[in-house]
Length: 275
Length: 232
Image: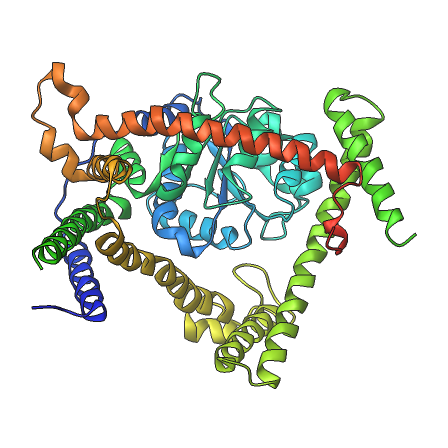
């Protein structure tokens, strides 16, 4: 039986839809191994002393939130667990809402954490790398108020945090430019602040060269798998762990499709040769 | 004058910023700090320019009923709606011109802007990106065909990385003894990403870096003028 290309495509879409939906509805609970890159990022936060101020920059929008939002939530929870104080920033306009959503979710388990004391959302600033450079000279000049219009000097968390150099680490959850690379180039290379972060799986290979002996990046979370690894490290049963089952099944299915495609071409070639 | 003034400013600013990287002392650091402030202000105006351009472009297509003008109308209405709702009642904790919309919040549970953001924009945006999975699956079936040595290598590498990056890889070769752990799928995938991938990426990055230095010098020296709007 010979199927047209459109019918074939529709079958592929339907099978993939079922394959992705079933593990989401009925989680399998497959385990993933923690990679060295994830472990490095985890160790950075784990070994930062209590009370230190850190920056998590939400440099993405809703299109990539499936991969990056679980990382943000897990990193916030880890920092809260270790008693660190979080400054949330955004180099992407929608990052502000992403940060708020991540805090809202984590705060359900940490109701004692107070805005302005344990965390603050400074919001979005245009300018990308130049904004980070300006933060190196003074945070207040770049962010005179937080997202709730509270002046910088009235936020207790920021009392002793005047410039980028005063933070213990920076994590950029990045789905493009500006993002992780800009933070690394300024915060790490110019101000010697450890930088870690997360990105989508598709852009992870481009960041791996920066996880080197000079620690331009201290670890990297690449895609949903790394997010689920991070969740397992901090003992959190988050969305990445659930979604990882669906992703694993989808990947397996893609392998099956590749095999079927090759068989189809092989059979067609053979038939042509016989004719 | 119209084209020579921007070239002159680009040269002066470019040289100052370049020098400030090598001489991080007065007066260069103060000048660069001021320039950074200017850059952020100009970037803010760029957003405004983008919005004006979006309105003009869409309006043109709707007025002239060009192909798919209905989608442009939907886009323009969505843009206007979010803009008006944001201006009138603000978002999250920030009040708008008409305050906090307590009545609407009691009904919707959120401010109108936040409600639409979470229940319309967010799922739509995530859905659009998720559709990639379907295209990838279809493309893998049609295009990932073994044709020669290169495609063979690509196929083998892809299969190892795909399996190694999922939970299945852990299960398939998790039983291997300690001395054969290199062949464990996740370890193989990590090896490919850490060595061949990193080597190739570094080569690309270094080339791109040199290219950026070259084009920056061309802009500073006024050789590259396409940013002025010309075709040179």
